Image 1 (cartoon, one colour):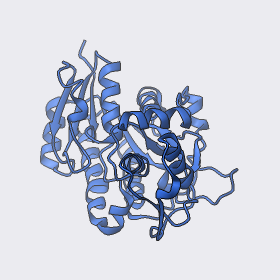
Image 2 (image 1 turned 90 degrees about the horizontal axis):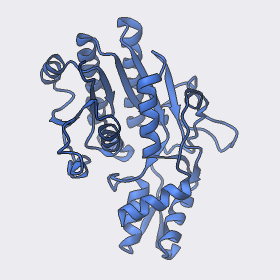
Image 3 (image 1 turned 45 degrees about the vertical axis):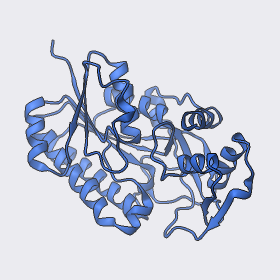
Image 4 (image 1 turned 180 degrees about the vertical axis):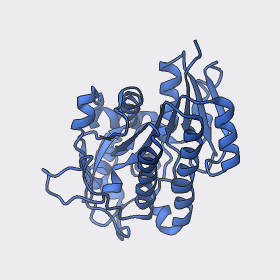
Length: 315
């Protein structure tokens, strides 16, 4: 019996890298292919522990390179595509939005064409809760899978566009798909431009920690390992064509997150420095994960245990 082949795009990045390791170790009978361009936020150092395993393969390629991608799909005949490759830093999207259109929209469309050509079993597109826009500070309001898409940054607009292409390929061509939309991830291997790894590294080095505005913007935090288990579940058991929101039910203001890290590391809150707010900074994200919970998923990390583990990893 042929071994199932799983392509993970963006497998040298943060979430993709954690997912590649998770899949290689959990499914020794699967062939796991890590496709990544190795841009500034990707590296293979994180995969030293698995690079010698027979079921792990690395391919350096750009998902926008249509000829290369189509040839790869024709050669390997992947069963599953798990698409995590993306430009994801909101600040960078405000400065150079065209890069986000190229990778997140055109790259996704190239992959969809390739998946359609060979007839994959499932195309799972990993997206973000940011496509829904922002919530107010009412603690009883949450994003559901039926919330309208109202992206406010070039990054989230590019992800919403890619979501729509995935949906269109399902509706037009019958491509088997799922879309997952997660809340803010944290954990090992995250590039230190994002809030938690930036804060940890700066606290350790006694550097000032910049916080946008008044620090009251709220995010729902999800440990990357819990995200990986959710992607795995949707890949194997998600109903064809469905969207699943993945949230940690760990809402914190940015200021609370920073102060938690400072206190765990035993430093002074005087290193906090408030800076002018980000353009179009969304007030609050929060996810209702009822649908994926009904599929059988539960997070294993509380924010307290997850942030302690993450700090220890960065130390």
